[in-house]
Image 1 (cartoon, rainbow, N blue to C red):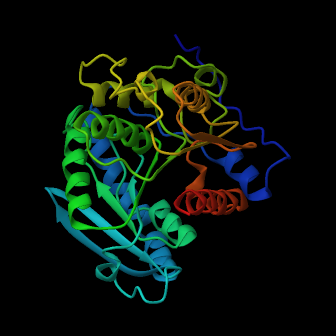
Image 2: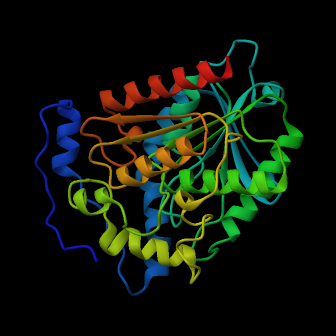
Length: 322
């Protein structure tokens, strides 16, 4: 049982001034116990309004072409960055190119495919990004999102050549690991590399940071937030199910090279560390990057640490594809 903890707004001097300001000023948004569905719907609508100016600005600054299509029943946003090779002028030109398949975050209840990180990843790597708008809870609980994403991912494999880098942030990172397990079960081709950005890999607060960073992470909290989203997504299924909490999954040396990233203030830091050791003990090639003073999903913020992280992730991806 988590103890009630006050918000810790003290900011370390080891991070940038912009990061210090976010630590002091930001606070997680709780989900009320009652009227959960209505609050989630309003949160989705308000987030679209709040983020629209920044998404428009990033689209103009970072992308050469953005298209949206339905693939096997799900919406897929394809992003071609300005940093892509010059001979790729449109998304259609990138059919045989190496690309990123991206799964957004949002605790399985909010979030959109065309977000800031999808464009930042495309810009940093110079690769086309195909972002899957998987169905969300509580309307579509587990295992609906996993199975729907599997069908769409398989369709993308059939439609496009090139190697795939599977990437996901937060809940999208957990979903990427669940998808990896299903690909292995079905005997389907695995991605060339796996990038997990502060992934949510355990739907229970069983790690050290789940207690220690409660109140220190300016973007996320367990009480009245993660716990309610987890129950909505699981819909009564046991949290220990490896497709819900992939830290409990069975892995082997066939798992593709994997990068796990987190920060010292990340609520999910322990889950990332536990996943790293589970993959390593299974013989899988895995790397862990921990950023000083950073919190959950800091990659989408306009701070120097996020830009450094984008460059580090891009370098890791190109090293694996090389």
